[in-house]
Length: 304
Ligand SMILES: Nc1ncnc2c1ncn2[C@@H]1O[C@H](COP(=O)(O)OP(=O)(O)OP(=O)(O)O)[C@@H](O)[C@H]1O
Image (cartoon, rainbow, N blue to C red; front, side, top):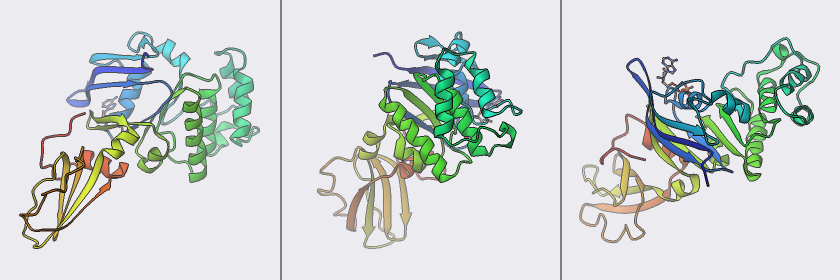
């Protein structure tokens, strides 16, 4: 099946600053895909390329089978898109902006928009400029999904929203994916991404470090802890792909991918390890292991 979003070695630089470096991703239909990255990692640049607002310097990007470079308008009409700072006509009432926007879409848009606005509890008699940030975000989302797009792209959708609104918002994304729609959201809210995402892409300084189904990523990544008999004793690296190593007193700790099932047999017996344990890593631990530039990386760089 054709991916809903496809990026093939997409690069973009601004002057000397490399915002994206040969990023390749294929996102299948019917998933919530979370793009995680710290400030300035390249998330918005990637979204602007997908929505046709920016052209890549090299590589190819397509959305719903259309090339982003040449079909930006067509793509923006087909998908739902909410930017990190949605531009709304401030003087309008929620009902007015719905009516105005419905002119660009097929019949049924307006009815669906009104249902969503009612469902989101947005007051209909208050001008947009006087709505709260959360209420405005709900109006932007209702406008983006009232035509029931196959793909919804959200840039930092929950920043500034209260926990209840965020939860409601993200649950509605899971509902969309269950109906076969695809959602791409960028975020640095790792905890909430962990609750809703099916797939995760971690981007760091323009490089896509990891792109994997979340369950597979978590079940293949472990925190290995070794307690040493002496604070000067050094344990050998555990088997698998060691992302980071941390030493604190007598304790050594590694974030390891693809740890073999029998890893403990014979490990550490000759270098003073008194206690060994392995627990599954959280998404936050994986994110830090991949993105923290201060982390000690005993092996070669992590590649996708
Ligand atoms: N129009 C532009 N001109 C110059 N540099 C830019 C431009 N847009 C983005 N950049 C740079 O590209 C890099 C990636 O920026 P981008 O906005 O994509 O990051 P981001 O991951 O969305 O960050 P944040 O989470 O802070 O929104 C940054 O170093 C940024 O300064």
